Length: 581
Image (cartoon, rainbow, N blue to C red):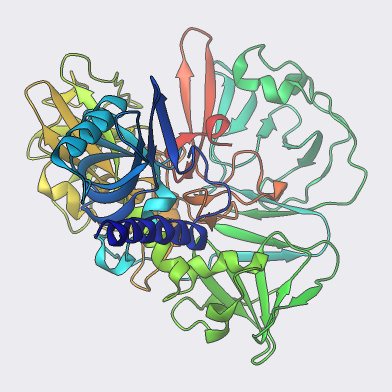
């Protein structure tokens, strides 16, 4: 029997190792690896990689792992099994699951009662029951069946194509959320203004009546921001050369007067969501073995040509679009994608797109990862700071199909429900009897807030929920939807709601100061990466330093200037561009 038990333990060890090799990348960040050895006073405990039995609602985990004990009190190395049930917390950024408050059972079959007592005491002393155990999130996910785990609710998203531009020569895409909106760099001086709703640094000199755009280390100029034409600036106006010496404009001042542009540049302008396909010269192709697909090899975009139907396919923000020519017109392709995309070999760079191909293992894994909640614990005595501001008196408008009103002139996500105000920031809910506060932690979020539809810019806040409340603490959890990563009814994870959100912003009188960072799906080459943990910005500099996430402006009375606060939207939630990229 003892030999049979050792064989069973060996099976646990080998099964665990095999699962690890099959489903986990060679380098797992922040994972010290397995087995783990703990030594003290001539005794040694070896803990082998846990085998995950189940993870209930991503809160309670049940694991088994093989252990071995060496001690002078026993004649040989003894193997056993630890069966553990524990609470969990997940650090999405470091991709680590921590097991807390463990309840464990140790088994050493075919050992005498005296030996078992010595072995259990040794394990408890080297690894006390109250200690924590960290396991790579990737290793845990390798054991789970995505179809049996709780997932974010699927929602209807807009699958229509945005504007899609193509260029085989150097080009950039300049986005404005609606028509260009300008504010003075210095409040009482109207000679130099800046665009507060663009993904690029765009200025307007009133004296010259010209626009100026900083493109890396060089400047472009145009008489009309939207119509152009944008050409290399011959000389910068005095107002721009005299930017205030504060941090708002430090990155701009570094490039004054800037370098002369040596190569021609195409500037595409859009006042609505758009994407840019950029190739280095005429498109070149790489055939994908086992399919009728050829990938456009000289582009950072995911673009393919299907040799069977002679159609191009573009993937961005989790959505597929098709056209017979790279210049368009483009149409939606997410619901009837050719079967060849599921056949792309896993050992090719093109395999990264399979997370957006319905029915693939990669797509199911992406949904699973997006559904794992991140926990935020706050204390009643020391809540996070919150400062809610409005441009003028607070203004609220009812969200269509709901009884919820939202603030249209605040950079904060503020809502009015049944005469009480609620604000969600950094994954924490606050409430107040007044629009301006004082604010306290919210322990019960109104159910109406969770009816905000996907087409509304505030749809991300329903993904933050109250998990637990004690007399001293409130625990909130958030899933990837709070970062604008939504599960589509097609069965894949997509970024943002699509062009509908952009239309809402463009129709809003206050869109130049978005209420909160908006999940603007297009305009920054959003692509999914499993090991990054969600969507991130594509590598192309053609989208500008501020990506396509939106921006807001705020007046600083101490300096007499407006600050431009650009935002990016990504898997870690809304964050400043400087922090996110």
